[in-house]
Image (cartoon, rainbow over all chains, first blue to last red; front, side):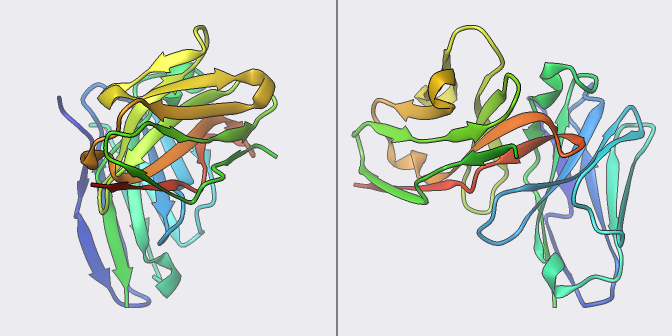
Length: 117
Length: 115
C-alpha cells in the first residue's frame, strides 16, 4: 500500500539558511499535518491543511510557513534556521474532514532529519 | 490541560515474555486514543486506535490495548514479544486541544528485548 512520502530524508543546513521540506500524502488523503520531533522528545504538532487551506496551527515559529498545493502535496518552508531547529520533521496524512473522528487516524511518513550547523 | 503520560521511560523484557506498556491520559471529552511504534530513525507506524465501542481493541503485529475510562488508561499489551518489537512506543490522544485539532503524544517508552 502507498504510504506518505517525504523528501529529502536528510538535510544539512547552516544557521540563517532556509530549508524546504516536501510531503506527498497517501493517495486520496486530503488532510496533511506537520510535526516536529526533537532529539529524545515526542512529536509536537506544527500545522495542518485540509483541502489546500490551513486548518489548524500549533507551536510553529513565525520563521516557518507551509502550504498545500492543488495535488495535495505540502511543503514546509523554514527560514533563518537556528541550531534549535535541528529535529526530525514528520508529515502525516488522513482521509476525513476536520472534526470527523477519522481525521485523527493519521499516517506518518518516514520523516526528514534536519541538521542545522 | 489535556495530556498523555507514559510512566515508563524504558522497559526491558525477555523474548517470548508478555508485555504491557502503560498510558494515562487527561482529556475532558471522549478521547480518541492511539498507539504508534517508532523504530530507530524511522517514522511512526500506527499500531491500533480507539474511537468508541468495544474497549479492547486489536492492532497489528499481535498488539492489543484496553481502554479503561475509570482509570483514564489505554495500556498496550502483547502476549509474547519478539526481538523485532524493540522500538519506541508512543501513546497519543486526538482531540481539539489548545485551539487546534491534533494528536498529542506521550513521552514514549523505549522497549528493549533480551534474547
